[in-house]
Image (cartoon, rainbow, N blue to C red; front, side):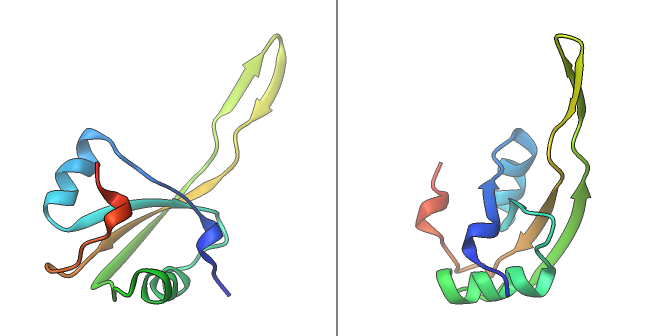
Length: 93
């Protein structure tokens, strides 16, 4: 079952701030999170039923440090459409 600890961050960029004006927030999660799991988390912890959820896998970048190759962790990004009257206090910028 999905848990709120699977949510890593809410992404704030120029693009996502523009989407927030339309009622869409962008959430970065662990790769094991599913659409239905994210909907359950939003219902349970925020009391909001999302209208629509789109997901996108993000592969971690391969980086090199002092000649040693490493890889950043994979994650998932979700675009969550909220109802017009829904507000989340923790999302205030």
